[in-house]
View 1 (cartoon, one colour):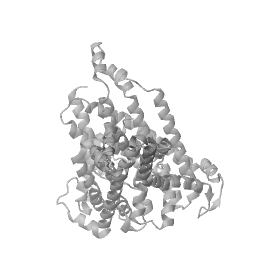
View 2 (tube, rainbow over the protein chains, first blue to last red):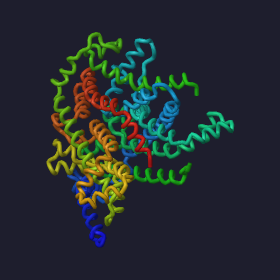
View 3 (cartoon, helix red, strand yellow):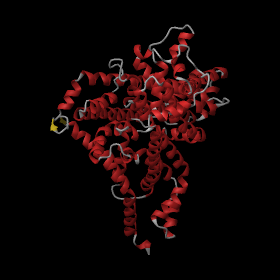
View 4 (cartoon, rainbow over the protein chains, first blue to last red):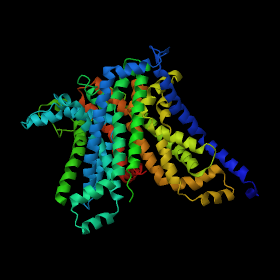
Amino acid sequence: MTMLRPRTLSGRYARTAYLFLIPAILFFAAFFYLPIGNVTATSLRTGPQADQWAGLGNYTQALADPAVRHSFLVTVIFSVLVVIGSIVLGLALALALDQPLKGRVVFRVLLLVPYLTSVAIVGLLWRNILDPELGVLNRVLGAAGLPEQTWLNTSPLLTIAAVTLWQSVGYTMVLFLAGLQGIPETYHEAAKIDGADPWHRFWRITLPLLAPTTLFVSVMAVISGLQAFGQAYIITNGGPGDATDLSVFHIFNVAFRARDFGYSSAQSVLLLVVIVAFTLVQLRAGRRGEVTY
Amino acid sequence: MRKPLLYILLGLASLATVVPLLYMVSLSLQTEAETLSADAVLVPDSPQWGNYAELFTRAPFGNFIVNSLVVAGAITLAHLLFDPLVGYVFAKFRFPLRNTLFVALLATLMVPFFVRMIPLYVLMATMGWLDTYQGLITPFLMDAFGIFLMRQFIQPIPDDLISAARIDGASELRIYRSVILPQTRPALAVLGLFTFVFQWNEFLWPLVATTTPEMRTIPVGLTLFNQEYFTLWHLTAAGSVILFVPTAVLFVFTQRYFVRGIALTGIK
């Protein structure tokens, strides 16, 4: 009998589908789409209560504001450093772990451990280690008669990028490892028979076939680099001066220390536009250059 | 490359990740004098277990722990409850606006948290939800990634299983609970582990959404403790160890799931 009423049946399943979806629709409306609407609305307003119409005033002000431009530049440099480090170190470690070695699981576990730690631990621990006066590294170097370091003063951005890598490199390594294991063994076998040395096999086979993984790693690293916050908040407080004034840290300060919700909202919308544009461009570039096995 | 060289490379890299964490443990057991002595102390003379007790008298650290457990636990449960259900709907149902809703869902993947931070703060302030568990929990009840993961996992389950159950007269909720859900256990394990660890470590939102020390989670409570008592590194280290141990223990027992989970995120 049900066979005779397919229309009603599919209608019934559609009702079930919507019934199951109600919590999700409410959640994403209330906690994603409503906030995006609100942040856009607030970005067009000014004043301590963000209730006076400002039009695009906040945007033109942000685009001309040297502090905003500086923090964006700092964030881009930070992200580029993290991306390069992720690819080079993550790939090197993955290539090493891809060999038939003893204790691979142990190495993999040890290298992944920092990825599981909170940015609070990473930040506090490395600030303690690297502190020019009280840090343990300088006390060890001093006791050994070696020159002491002041990296957090001399190259703060590079230093917090390195600390970020310390935490995340295990993650990129696992991604590259999965990519490497997806490359069919036959390509390497054939190249070996043709007399290609390991160096050539790496550049001509491994690297091109890893392109999708490399693209994914770089997209992820840029996106998380552009959103970095804890490193600046915990390790450097944006300093020295404004040398590590990462964008989200800057937005946080404008919003919650200076209490300017209109101006900070405009800045976060601008940063969102940059991130979305960047993601779409990279994914499109990746699709064009896609490799088929 | 020759094998000894590989062992050296991996050995050095592993030391670089593990030694700082071991130093953190050592620091947590030192006296205040040892943390400052010119000759750096790497292994304390006599481990000061009392540091851990002192931490609880200097800050409401018991509250931090309970708060972290409640918030990360509730969010994880919500993900385990909702993500597979929504994933199932998008994997196995045909209904009007299905593609539109799915695209709208995936689009949220591109919305970083900082964009939601200010409006969510205003929303929570308006509702009087700052400094409450519901304020800390509700913004993270579900996410598109978890739903997408579950959808990918449910899609290969044969439709015939569902049709057969329908012919047998099983209710739709029963089909989901008894036919679909049991098959998704490996994916649920990955989802639960990742959600718990990420929420346990979450820093920005608990920093923004709490004002009283009693409502802080461990990462935020510890960081603000360190700002207040910035010379008491042995206590900060003890707090870091408390924050770290649960995730480390969880990881050691489930590292296969973690590795598989990370690899899954890389597969298109």
